[in-house]
Length: 295
Image 1 (cartoon, rainbow, N blue to C red):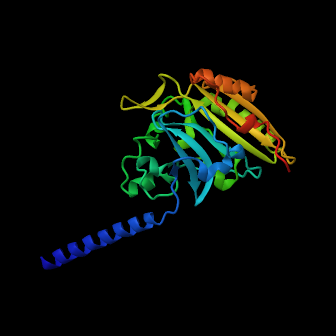
Image 2 (image 1 turned 90 degrees about the vertical axis):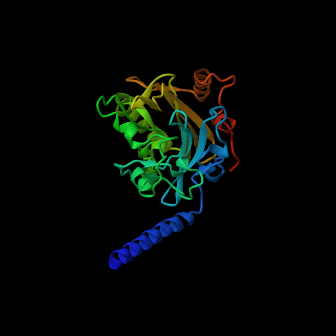
Image 3 (image 1 turned 60 degrees about the vertical axis):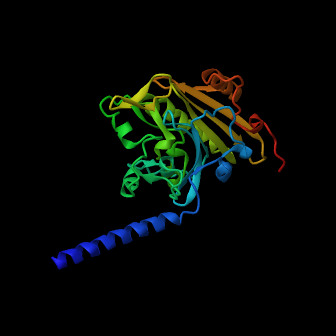
């Protein structure tokens, strides 16, 4: 009996020791992932200008961090559980390696967590963080797509526009929306590929890709609305050449089996104003990407 009690006591001490070690490891994080603004990752915005006129009362700012490095920025809508937009800089040395597992954002579960970067859902469960799905999409939401295959994990910031590590960082559920499968694998994929050829000619290409929520189309789980299926997707870019001249372009598409329409930046901004019921058109880039910077 004494030996059993001694063993149980030693086991309890070991479990407590492991718990303390995990907490200590988490406490050594040096930077938050969910932030108050994009100051920590403003390099992904042309001239550091954060888009105006796209926010609602349910948005959070995420500097997307992977392997101790920022890779892009996302404004995330916690009510619809989809990103409003992701902002990134195109990497011309793109070398993709697609992941099978998807990341979630620890600090959307608990802002006080010291976890500094995206984690897989399995890693979150190991650390007994159980409320990860309150304000974000999780694997189970997208698993429900399997019977119909109508929608895909639709990247806003695409893997194919980045080098290997940057590509891996795009595989977070805070960067994807339920996207019509035929659109994602057809016209939208073609547009992303053609965009690469444009961006390769830029010294720096600043890109925004966003989604407009639908009013009543949701992925459901257990009869509960979980993830909004957006009505439209859009992209805008600001291309800065070697002489610091800036030029822009944009595109939009309905989230169904349809074509991608190339439009001028001003036309896209007016489109967003109408769809989002804004009094003024959103402003996506500093000086509408028309400024000339001195060499």
